[in-house]
Image 1: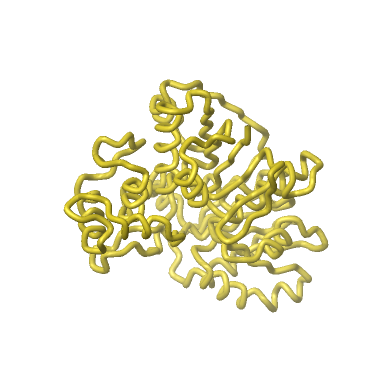
Image 2 (image 1 turned 120 degrees about the vertical axis):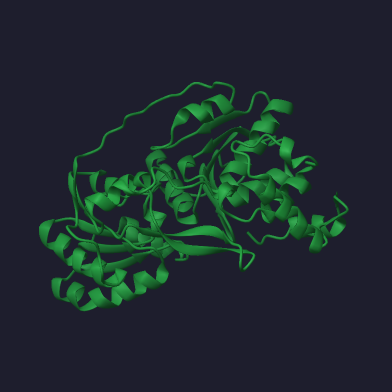
Length: 368
């Protein structure tokens, strides 16, 4: 059967498939393939399919038995996206009721494995220490008072001077990347260093060039797409702004929105580790050691902070009628479920608690 590997982002799905295919010595799209929104490179012969969680949920709705699949791998599960939580709960249900032969693997570098093991029937926990190189971590002495792009551009110049490899800088979003890129443009030209952005909206060819180009030294300005799942060979220095855009529910708007927020300590560790993948390196964090102590240990799971109508719509389409009895890995609050049901009622997806034909059509729209 086919092995399906789930990734939280398109860039991670593409790069993971390309890396596995390269290691297997095959052409991408044959034995190893990928499938992301609006793009696929796979065939009937594909044995390992890497895809995003949203694409997999759509496949699961169309093929609840997962008849051609023998194993589902949840990579980077510590990110705890809403889609990954929902997909794990549904695959667990399929395995329990229909496919006892279906294998489930949950992988993470930072997640506490015990709760997941218990959720999956006390399944075995396998630890693979792997190999990493030492990373010297430095915090700034006083809190930053400048704009993010100004602080990051200055830090990038410092780290480029102190190291000989590529410099990877983490910024919260595309706007910050573009402004930092403008500030570093002249410096990069003078030093003959390639200045490259890396974010999820880039074409595959551009993303692959950032990951594989070895023609010159690079400064990579990235969102958290570079935090996990991908390896950029030759990175010896990381500059971490300590900020990210976190999806959360805005009660005044009644919608989810991306808010600028501090990252967690686990995310900071992941980012620093990018400098120690292929050799020893350095990481400069643009926050103080005291500020670091105040960071949350892990990023709060999406299921506890986002609006749930899309998730509830998928569950109603799946056939669930009692959402409180559904086998969540971590159940949302009753008020969050009530809000989602009320919104779907107003939109006509449900009527007096019953799923409507309009709701069925809504659930099938690829709007994630």
